[in-house]
Image (cartoon, rainbow, N blue to C red):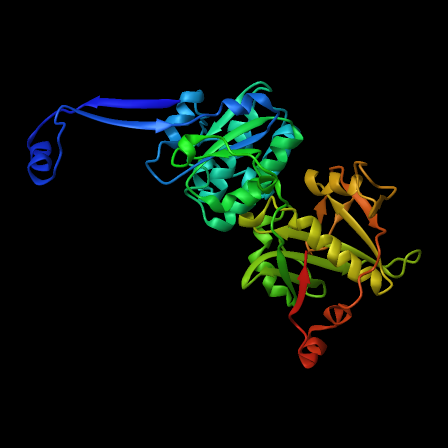
Length: 384
């Protein structure tokens, strides 16, 4: 199929300059053609398609031919989550988390105070959430305005959501680096094979491996992460702090603390698990909390977790690595003072004990900072 775009030229001194300076034959009209053929997409079930090509290749034209582009409108006088008022509050929070926008304090900010990456994720959540089951969601300029790390993480997050809910999504992008994170069912380019649809197992390969470095750090490193967590920002200096990085970029932190009682004298708890916004949606929170739990278990500790995060909590509910405690999903009216200031708890939380195997080889990372410095062992590699 060919889309012909023809437009009359309104001549003036500027167009005359172009005619006189360059070899332009037609001075009455401009015309261009965009080729595409997506008829094969009707012959199989799919969830995600990608139209790719350089700027000006006709990607947007093809999308418009397929239907109305998804749009979003945010009220700047409302908190971000309040803009999703066609959903129940718990459904809105799950939708935002599913798009990798899981920093709870961010939900309370108006749209215009979000970063570029957060705004793009919020727009995706809005457009995807508004779509009915039969709609094909059309997104133009996918990831064009965000950092490439953000592009990869949000691509992985949205493809999980689309497939889990069996929706259909077509994005147009000039960035080929998102393909291995989106794992599309088909792709096409108006610049290749006359826009014919391409399929193949190579499109559905698993995401690239991520190598994280883990370091034991001092408590002041928490300052980089604390504003992204929903609990009290301060943590005691006596807690253990593990920093996770990709290359030289910090991406997440897991904070643990002793929680021994008479019944469980070797008990520990994960006090905080935080992934920076640019890397949310890739499943890193699960990986770093499981890793921290496994090295503590290897040292003979029993590890307990508590979260109100829907994504993290439901993962633990369905994982063989965790078992629920007696307090799981029960509303409490006690106080939490692990950061120094007492905070009244009136919410239900996901409460579990880690029962997975211990992981050996990382014993030194649990040593006091002073001893670790002496061993010069503060940068161990972890592959997730």
